[in-house]
Amino acid sequence: MLSGTAETIHGSVLEAARLYPDRTALMYTRGREYVGITYSDLAGIVERAASMLRSAGLRRGDVVGILSPNRPEWIVADLAVLSAGGVVVPVYHTIPSDQLRYIINDSGMRMLFVGEAGLASKVAALRHETGGLEKVISLDELSLETAATAGAGVARPAEATATGRESPRAGAGPAGNGVTASDAATIVYTSGTTGEPKGVVLTHGNLVSNARALIRRYGITIDDSALSYLPLAHMFERTCGHYVFLFAGGTVAYARGLTTVVEDVLVVRPTVLIAVPRVLEKAYETALGRIERGSRVGGAVVRQAFAVLNECANRRYRGERVPFWLGLQCRMYDALIASRFRKAGGGRLRIIVSGGAPLDRRLGKILRVLGFAVVEGYGLTETSPVVCCGRVAEHRLGTVGKPLDGVEVRIADDGEILVRGPNVMRGYLNKPEETTKVLDPDGWLHTGDLGQFDEDGNLVVTGRSKEIIVTSYGKNVAPAPIEQRIARSPYVSQAVVFGDNRKSIVALIVPNRQAVTKYAGEHGIATASYDALLAHPEIRQLLGGEVKKANDEGASYERVFEFELLAEPFSEEGGTLTPTLKVRRKKVAETCTDRIQALYDKLEAKRAH
Image 1 (cartoon, rainbow, N blue to C red):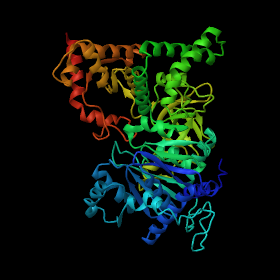
Image 2 (image 1 turned 120 degrees about the horizontal axis):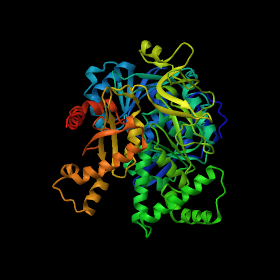
Image 3 (image 1 turned 90 degrees about the vertical axis):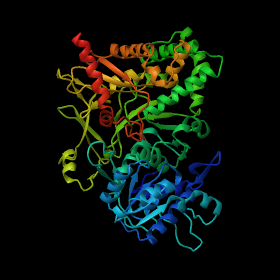
C-alpha cells in the first residue's frame, strides 16, 4: 500500500508510478479486446501533455475544462492540467449549450479539452459568447493509441530521459510549479436543478485526504481493480473510481458504455465495483433473467434458494446456531444458485460500494445473501465527495456507515446533517453569499440532508430537506422511501411521488416495459400499441396491486392514492435524470404538470361521489 507522502493529486499518482512502474494503471478497449498501459507509460504521457500545455501558455491557477465521455485520455488530461499547475473543470458531455456557456464564462476557462467532433462543434457555436476561451484541444492529441504505437521514449518516473533530464519526483509536477495541498485542483459545477449552477471549489488537499481515507478503510492495494462507467465529471467516479485506485497502484478499466457494463464486468473481473443503485438494480435483474433462462433452474428454485440463504443469513446475524440440515441446504443452494450470480459479477468482487442515492434495503439484502460484500456510502460534491461509508465486516443495511477518518459529522437540532473535515470544499466560486449560507464560521458544512445516528454510530440519511413533502395536513413525508417501495415491483422501472401542500400523495410510474409486455402475452391481453396496453384495465389493476403492496409497508400518510402510468422513462436526455441516474424531481414536476393535476382532479371527482 502507498506510503501517502505526496500532498497533490498528480504527485500521488507519480508516487505510485515510481513504486509500481510496471503495474497496469489503465485498461481500455482496442477493437474487441482490452489492452493496458503501465504506470511508467502513464507518467510519461502525462508529463508530455503537461509540457504541451505549458508551451501553449498555461500558467499556474489557469482554468482548463474537460468536455468528454469517459475515456482514458480524460484522466490523462486531468493529471496533465494538475501537473502543469492548472485547475480542472469537468463538464458533462450531455450538458445543454446554455449551461456550457455559463460554466465556461463563470469559471474563467482559458482552455477546453473535447472528446468528440460533435462536442467541438457544440463549443464552436458558442465561441462568440465565450471570449475568455482561448484554445479548444481534442483529446485525440493525448491518444494512448499513439503512445502505444510509438512504443518508445516514455521515461519511467525514477529514470532519466534520453536527454539526461530527471523525471519528476513524487509530490511535484513535472516542472514543480509550486502546487501545494491548499491550491485549488478542480471546480465542479452542481447540476443546477434550481437556479444557476454553482461551482464547487475543491483543493488538492480535499481530494487527496478523501482518497487516502478510502484506501485505508477498504484496504485498496496494487491487486485491486475497478471498472469505470459512471461519468468522470461526477466526483463519485473521479475520486472513488479513479484517484483511490491510481494512488494505491491499482488498475482502472474503462467500460465500453453504460449499456455494456454487465458484459464488461465479465471480461475485466474487477475486485471493487463503484455503483449507483439504479445500475445495481439493472445488473441484478439481468443476471436473474439469464440464470432463470439459461439453465434448467427455474424461477421457483431460485426463490427457494433465496429463502434458504436468507434464513441462514438471519440466524448468523442474530448469533443463532444454524442447524445441520439448514447449513447443508445453504451450501447446496450457494453452489447451485448464488455462485452463478457471483460469476456474473466477474468472480473476483470483494466489495460493492453503492452511493449517489439510497440503496433499496431489499436489494441490498439479496446481494449480501448471494455472497456479495455490499456497503453504502454518503457524500456530496462539496465534500470531495465521501463523508461516511460502511465497513465490510460491520455494515448495517439501511445505513451509510461511519464517518471517514478525520471527518466529523453531527446532527443539528432540526435534523440536518452537518459535516466538518479536510474534505470540505473551499467554497462556491464567485458566490460568497451562497458559500456563507452553507459554511458556518466554525467550518461546519450544512448539507441540506436530514439524518440520525443508529445505536452503533452509523449514519442513517432520512431525506433531503428541500425534497420533503409537507401535505396540507402538515405531515412531513420523505418521498424516496415511498418510491423505493413501489420500484421494488418487477413490473415497475421508475416511480416519482408528489403531494406538497396537497391532501394526498400521487405517483407517476414508469412500468418495466419488458415485464408488463410479457404479462400481457401470458394473459392474452392484446392491444394496438404500448400506450393502449398501459391504459388496459387489467394492466392498471396489475400495477394498482403493486402500489397497494407498497402502501401496506408505509405509514397511512405515506399512502399513494392515485397514479399515472408513463410509457416513456425518465432520462438524462430528457433532462429528468442526472448523469448518475437520480431523478430531477423539480424537472419532472415541470414537464408533467398537467398529468399531476389530472391525478388530483380524478381524486376530487372520486371524493365528490
